[in-house]
Image (cartoon, rainbow, N blue to C red; front, side):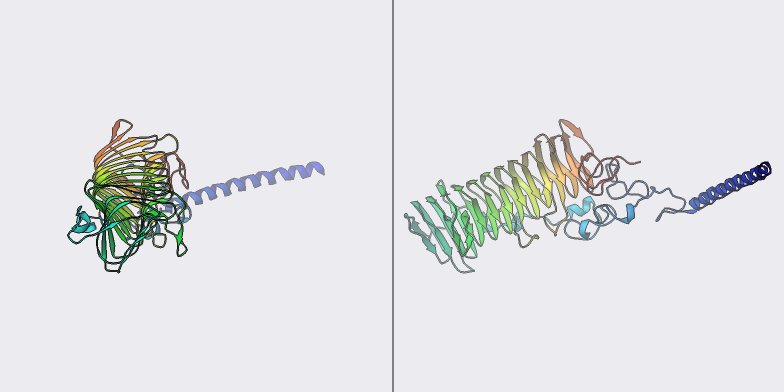
Length: 471
């Protein structure tokens, strides 16, 4: 009986094996048939998946995967929009417009002009003294100016504040002619109310304003600058003004302009600071700051806070940022030397002209998202720029958006020359990196490369970067 059962079992096993083999063959055939009819979304059946993919200048793909044109789940890793496919992060392109990035988009962003940014009186370096009022400072005795006019200030004193409390439409001009004030805890010049104040150094004069201690408060707020203005402030003249501060050097809660004279500021905090803008037309400016050199920012509105330099000579040494703007930093002319942790920083950096030297230990020139009105970008359009970087994790030119080199020259000495998140174009000008001229803008960390965060295979890339080269 046992032998008969075994003989019956063998044919059954053979039949089961044959049925299983036939089933696998059918499955494979079905799968092959299905795959042959599937088409990459958005691609015609006669095209390979990558035929229509836009190719940035460096051959990398900042916004698309090189295999199927889509991110996993249809989203960028950082949750934003594709950077090459028509929208910037937040749906904004440079200048706050919808659209795709291109050199033309960047160049179309509104720029400043000297004629628009400075009045004829701003640029006039000598005051009309025909009706000027002469004032001499005395120890412990404040001076209050409450009407429009020209006031000549001279003398040496301590614990003195010159107050300006005039009408909202009044313009006041303070002519410093051999003025020296040393205070312990309050501004030397405090502008409370006026339309605009001009601080003008008389020809050939030397003037010194110093605050040595912890600033006192006024109406519960610290007036923590040697020159503190709640309204527009313009510094000009043909003499010299030296400012030394235990906190900030010069502060304007509105616009601050420098159009002439020799200005030297040493500050334990920020040297020159304004809410709405800092504009420099001319002058010989030396800054030494424990925080930032020049800083434009209004913490209640991130659409203001720009810096425009149309000329002059600036020598800035700072422990943090050399020049820091919230929105736009534009340089048209002048000679600028910056030694700092970060050299130049803004959301949108435009370098149209001038001679700029940056010595930095973090980023040389940095475009970061500090304003909701602009998308980060850096344009080299005619300036002669030299960047010398310290060793370590540093970038000479770092944009959280794009980079355009269309003119001028860039001479970089650094381990990482360029780092960008979206795209870069070289349409003109000269680029030298570590002694070698290059014709393409390589990327250290952005779409591909060696670092950053949020990337994918081929390196750890920038946000949404797809590391490595095109397939």
